[in-house]
Image 1 (cartoon, one colour):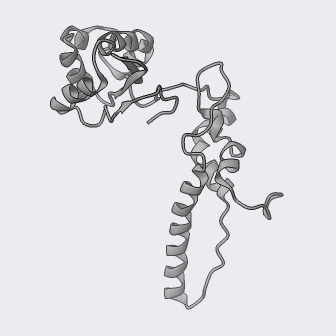
Image 2 (cartoon, rainbow, N blue to C red):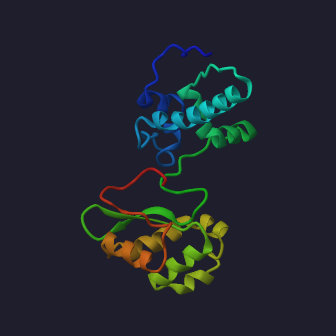
Length: 201
């Protein structure tokens, strides 16, 4: 029972209080709002559901009820645990990484033909990366030492993003989507964007 226990739970207020906004944005710049402003409103029901099922199971076994006390703030903290653990272990605060992802490379929003047109592309494994290279007409990149593994692609991510952006810049985002999805590239590219995203998908 903390000092805010009697305050109403509003997601738009709790998301920044819980520190979620601090992870969103670009390196060296101010944090940005969470894409879904009432984010903790979306998180807490999942914890509430698990707690409710456990309480019903306990009642079925013992005949006794349970009092459930759920904090939206505490459920939000769960989603920044990797950053908290990194800070506790090394004293280093996690850096905002824009559209990048620690689990995929490439993972970004790329400029397309037209006024403020963009597409989202991500490769979460070598197979998706190889499909992307072939469709870009640059199959030689598969064997390029800078990009032969996920680790190497992360190390050379700026160069990688430039190569992809050079390819997408002269195409409509819909065409990029259709070309990649037509090659079986399903997970990496989701949709075209009218404005540039600053959050990770």
